Amino acid sequence: MADEQFDPILLGLAQQISRVEGPGIDPILNTFLSFLRRKTDFFTGAEPERVREAILKAADRQLAIAQQEKARASQSKPAPSMAAAKPTQKSSPAPAPPVKAKTASGKDSSVEISMIDEDSDVAAKSGAGASGASASSASASQKGSDAEAQRDEDADEDEDDKGKIKPNVGNGADLEKYSWTQTLADVNVSFPLPAGIKARDIVCDISRKTLKVGIKGQDLIVDGELHEEIKTDEATWTIEANADGSRSLDVYFEKTNTMGWWPTVIKGDPEINTKKVVPENSKLSDLDGETRKTVEKMMYDQRQKAMGKPTSDEEQKQEMLKKFMAQHPEMDFSNAKFT
Image (cartoon, rainbow, N blue to C red):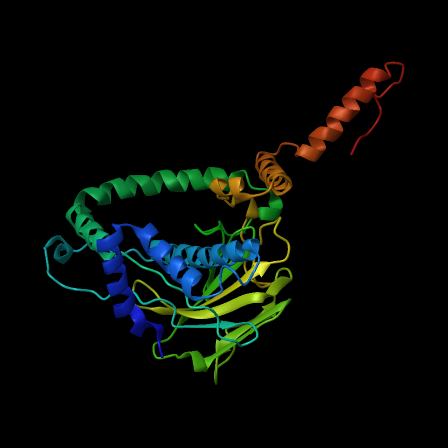
């Protein structure tokens, strides 16, 4: 049974909760968690940290999918039309939640819930159509300045970074066969699917070092070695219904090394310039002290390298050398070579 069949029930439940408890997402989440507390052993059958981890993992999963959809939407913005400026009355069904979920071992994963407010999206499209004429001239000017800024940015690149892709909004890349996003902890890979493809038609093999994805009876879309080893315990794949009506196969897994950015998902595929990755600074507050120091050091070193300046380790070595030279004025360092 497809998960879309539960939408009317969930939508009606959300509306009832809003009438009783008040508007917003918090009452809905609180009611659902209250149900799990009262009617299941979700909160009592495991350690508190495991409960928090499960909730945060589900939230991170949906956040990664949302970033993926945002990245796709930014790549395919429709041109404004005169018809968009005219008020029309139509009702669009809300995009469906994940259709099918499987773990790497083939077992059914937990149900995932998402809600999208379409009214604001329709209003935004109408506004975009009404202001299309004035926006075109501003867009041309913006493109010119963006191109100039891009040339300056490319000139500052290291030789090793020449030809690498600038990361998308999810710190990944939009490639011909798939697109991907990442955080320091996990990776989400999205493959566009033809119409009519069901879960039973999917071939998806996620191992610690390799990834195989395709459709039965066809050549594999991806069959290669991952950039680094991953955790397979919580690796999943889902068929997603996107806001534009298309469908995609989304593969999610966690990194083993959470202290670095991936330049690519599959070895041999085009790489991004990891020096241009934009981390979510707001997430630093969620990290423990040691991990936060490591991430901040890595971000600082990336900025220093991009500007052609010494990293924190190199600065420390230079400072130690200066102290040593000051303590030994009798020594001649004029012909010394330091690396």
